[in-house]
Every structure is written in C-alpha cells, then in structure tokens.
Length: 347
Image (cartoon, rainbow, N blue to C red; front, top):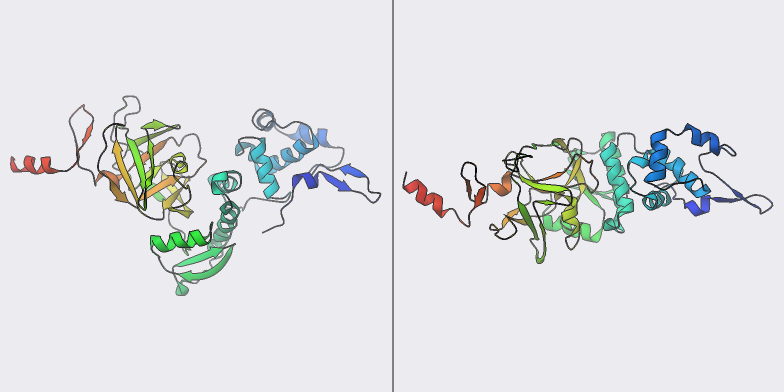
C-alpha cells in the first residue's frame, strides 16, 4: 500500500533557511486563481455548498484532491473529504476498472466509523482482489477460493461453512475469503406484488433477528429511512437497506466482506451477502408471521444512488410463509397452512 500522507504535514514545507513556506498541492505556485478559474461551475457550487470549501490553503488542497477524484459527487461534507485525504495521498488514483458504486464503497470503508479498524484492510483487499481477478493468475488446481489478508494470498481453499467464515473474519477483520472466479451479476426484478395505489406495490414491515443471538433483533417499518420494503415474488433473494444492518449489534458480523454487482433493478449497484442464515418475519407492526430462516439475504451497499429506494422481500421468504390474497384486499399471512388443507378437502 502506498505511503499515507497527512494534510497538516503537507501544508508546510521547510526551506534551507528553516523558513516556512505554504505549499498548495497539485497547484503550481502563484497560480491558485488561474486553477480556480478552470473549475467548472457545478464543481465550484458543490465545493462551496456541500463541502464548505473556501480559499484557505488547506481548502485549496482538498479542492484539488476532490477535483482529481470526482469526490464532490461522493463526499457528504468537508470532514469526510479530509478523512479520506488523510488516509490516502496526493497521488492516489482510483483503480481504472472501479465503477462509481465501487468507489462509493472504497470511500465508505475509510470515512464510515461502522467499519472501524477493518476499513483500511477492506480497502486493501478489495483492490488486491480486483487486480488478482484481472490478472488471470489464480490457480484453479489449488482450490476454488483464496484467503486474502493485507492484500496477500495466504492460502487457497474450497467452500467453507458459515461458522468457519465467521471465525476467519473474527480473527482477521476485513479479510477476504473469496472465489477465484468473479461471480456473475445477480439478476433481480424490481416489480412487486402490488398496492400503494400510487407505487403499485405491497409493502410490509420486516423484523430481522440474529440466528445465533436472539437479543440481536431490529425492525423496519414498511417505509423508513428513505426505503420501502416491498414484496417481490420475482426476486430470488431478499435485500435489506444497509441502514437496517447498521442497527444490529454489529453491522459487520454475519455478512461477507466481498460484494456482488447487480443486474436489473439497481443495475451496477453492489450488495453484500449474509455469511450465515438470519431469521426474518413479516408483519404490519402489530401482527407478525412465523420466523423464516434464510441465507439468501443481502444488504445494499451503504451509499447508493438516489434511485435505489426499495428493499425487497424475495421468493425464499415469501415461499416459506403461508398467505393468501383476495381481489382488492391486502395479503393475509397465516400462522400455518391448515386452512389450505381444509380448502383442498372441500374441492
């Protein structure tokens, strides 16, 4: 990993007579006005209104850094921008094949405190894994997966249990245990079963419980945190907003560190698959279904584009809960399917 630079150290540079000169990184001496004039108006507007950057030496350094990496479209405020700058260095560049959503993930690993000390390790392994996949150098004769720690292959292996995965992650936070062949994009459909007469969809409350810790449980209403939880029988998996995952005892435990790209709804956005089964039940906030255990559950990446505003309750869950629907009426979820046995007897 390249040497990391601290912005406060880079703002000052001693000359031979021990006098202190201000250095504007990435900007030629005495040309700050010229450089500023070259910034497009949209960039300047975002720097002023969103990032609160002015014309101080430190702000000009950050502005040049943001310009180079298009961070004005990623950072939410000046503090995030500075935190990423302090982690990186003036010559930092995005890996050429990283798309916008992957850049969002890298940025979030550094500035989001949820990732803790694992954040930097996740960045290192994310970049290393991409380079290894692109190099075509991974040896299938040694195993189907690799264990990456600090960007280095520790060993090859095959599919492991969720217990083994969680133990590896506990011992090496931010490690990658990933397939040597990149998984194809997951295809999901963004069409739900329907009502919300405007959105044409059926929305549900969802309760998520840790299968190994019954006290670790969170509830999301049908419309919360800018996301709607909708029933989608055409979706092969259930996808929750990252904000729901953040409210668990740990936002990292029980989730894989590698991400998968989507196709269909959320095109090119990334999701994280659960590393072990979770318990899910659905309801209206008062009445709840039985618990369903599934490992076909994913979470959106933390930062998503504004057009991603749905969580999906997919086939795996819906197919495990008996329910029926009358024309023009809401879905009814049942505790068991005895009523259907009685119905079939009367046919």
